[in-house]
Image 1 (cartoon, rainbow, N blue to C red):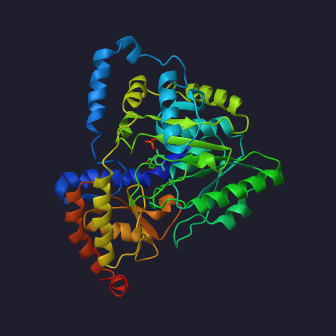
Image 2 (cartoon, rainbow, N blue to C red):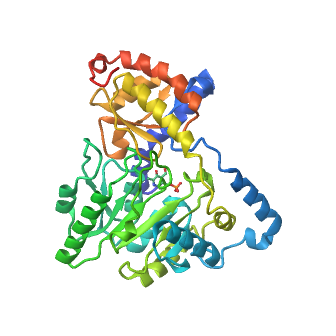
Image 3 (cartoon, rainbow, N blue to C red):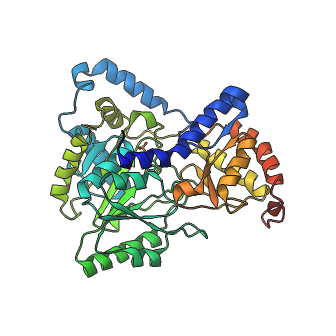
Length: 404
Ligand code: PLP
């Protein structure tokens, strides 16, 4: 018999799995070109050429015993961590060194490691809806309690008054994700400053340390020159979780890192704890080949213009049809208001047109749906007439002011 905890998790994750299976079934029945799958955040842009070259060079140059071996430290190779630290220092004016960087198995691995290191049972982790649904499972993995701040559906910037009210003696961490999955919103510098001030105030009030975990796999995926504030500069107890899954299109390679600045409370012991957590959670170390790849490809960039083109065409196409959504500033998701309150009905209706999208309730924000536009340009262009047919089923969209 599986555990009670897993029973609940399997039940909850069945919606996304069902959609995935439905997508495969539809592709087999109607042909993949006739299915418009906007459900997954799996980049359609190939990794930059430099990545392939670097992997081939590593296979040629490196001692295979080293390249395929355990890393000499669970935190990762010192030279790789130093390289990451120097790159951050150059870009954000920080002063990290190898010591502050722990290489992880993607952002998911990093988040699990930091939460394992921080949480006592019953500790609270605050996050802002809409949020990446896995935060709930990651928190629950360590018997923490996820506390949601309700969504601000005007502009999806966090509701700071509610945030202030929900911080308690038990608040151990706050997870923010900017650029955001599922909205594409980037939290403004003003928002970050205010959030930092609230955290300082509450730390004093409760005489606790509250860690701000910045989950930022989409940092580099921004449009129209949008700046993404580097959070360690605004609040000392900030931990950064990064991933190359999206920024270099390497989601299957499972590589990322955590930044634990010296300024963070108890940083020495936290670094030790993270090192051990990486091992005992079974990650052991981030994959050696991928670590060495990152050092070689530190200046490589994905083709953001590809996503930008998709963003514009999908956003403008949907707007014309009367759908409402805010223009994303980053990431590769559009968070669209469902024309009916029960957005799962809308998701089902879209499926009839072979369009696969994810209900907002998976992100703690019912009434909306997420569309991942990290698909081929053709998928978007070919999907728009299907969206047009779908829109006809909702006369209330016709009267929308933004319809052109
Ligand atoms: N955090 C957010 C907000 C994400 O959207 C994702 C993946 O989609 C992750 C974390 C996990 O990323 P990784 O592949 O690096 O584990």
